[in-house]
Length: 292
Image 1 (cartoon, helix red, strand yellow):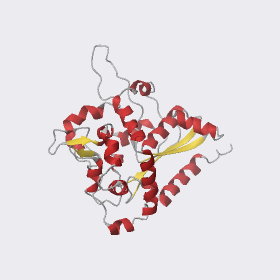
Image 2: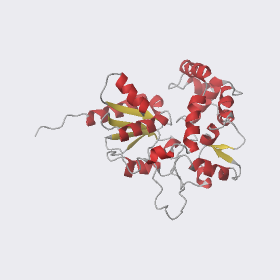
Image 3: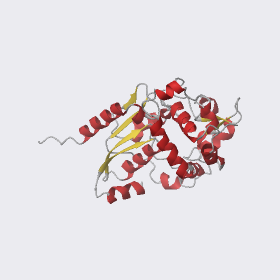
Image 4: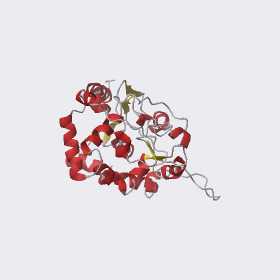
């Protein structure tokens, strides 16, 4: 959020409207929550914001607080390993030292790995049929696709290789043609994945929970909009987050827009529809107040 505020200032702006996708959705949400004077509205995409983590309550008698942000995945991961077949959470995997090398040196090659990953999380993968999970339990999480709750002995490269699209499907993929994928592959080849993976290390460590808990109970008061693909498991990977976003995290969120047939990369898969929804939202929130 500090980086984003600094960017706004560097661009010579006093206020903006902000849009964020996936991890960027969380960044945008925190920007709107903490600096509504700078961020006058917010569009969240493909990752619901459930609000700041609660401060552990009524613990003076020695009760132990559980379920804090950053700690619930490491806590449940050993239980996922006891499933049949054994599983592991992808965010935990991304904290491991091996994850960067596994993807950089994927057996199928980096471009093919990225193609498989983008395909499996998109609306093009026919097995993406999300639904609300019953709760944060190993049995419930086992219903998620393996790109979220992975097979215990597999890397992410091995996970997505199983569902590699056919040559015909790749040729027909208008939202991610090979020439664009080559740009992604070249950049990741240059930078690696580790800088992004460090975000998972920081989050799951629990080290910074206290910084977030300071804002416990605070809500997003500026107008908000949520857009996602209806075939995106990201809407449900954390049970209850979508509902909390609507009921308590945002005070001005009239509803959610789940675009039919789209998956996690909704702004790429359905750019015209996403642009239309964002423009409509901004026109509504920036409309001059009536003169009285």
